[in-house]
Image 1 (cartoon, one colour):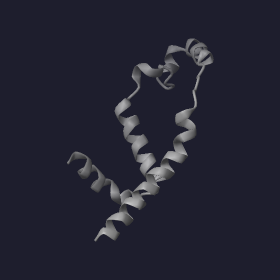
Image 2: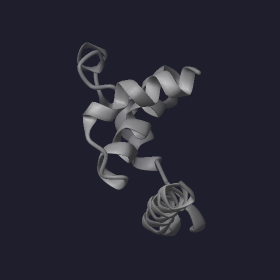
Image 3: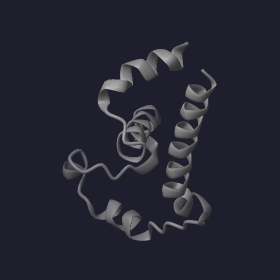
Length: 95
């Protein structure tokens, strides 16, 4: 029994470690995004076209769907989990 538990913990630790290694570059660097050209472009787009091109920026940003998509992408691409584990993870998260 202990060997199964240790095996699962080692496997979990390895997955966490690999995900951490994949994200460490982006998490430890300081990022500066300049958006002067975006602000200029926002003034150049006519109002009739502004409904087709979302240049409003952060005012209309949907954080809930963004976080949901980030978690989905991390599980799918970084942790290499299939989509069949998502319902189980959701039930576990609610619990």
